[in-house]
Length: 221
Ligand SMILES: [Fe+2]
Image 1 (cartoon, rainbow, N blue to C red):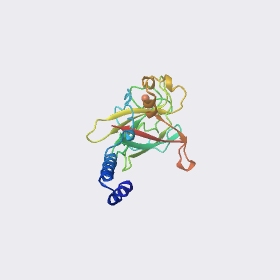
Image 2: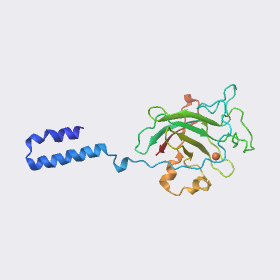
Image 3: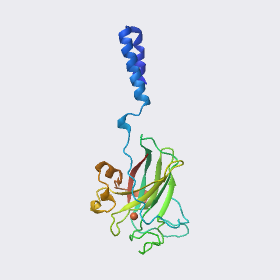
Image 4: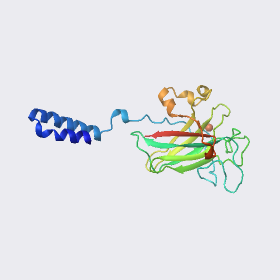
């Protein structure tokens, strides 16, 4: 706005030619303000397969803390992990009110799913959901994902918005040795698209009660 005001204030001391130029400059500035410039468009997060282990039956406890199950006193095995971030649209604007669901295997590499025969963890919720706030933020307490046969560590997720198609993808750990061998990840050829499905882990502050944390942005169309 300041740029436009400055230009306008010069009108009175300019002749018709300069006035025309100034006007064009104002129009160009207005166009820049009201048109999303190309550089502001974010690369969308690529969709990835839902996989075979989306819950057949959702757990009774459906909150955003997967490390505790209602009615039980124990805590899930594994490293407590604060999985948080924002959901944005391609213009970079936060997406408020979106339902984010996550699911992943437990610390023993088994999904809480009848199709997976591994060892269960009675204290791991396996699946959870939350709704993004006005800033597009979501937050889960879960465990740091672990590898299982054929797959490197990953968290599955869905983003559900009113009037939009459901978005399903997965997020893996940036820098995890062997990601290249993962049979889902290796189908993503584009380096920039790969960055969108990788989260950077950092040590969580001691007082948080978690071991690891991340801020992961999901860019939906
Ligand atoms: Fe999986």
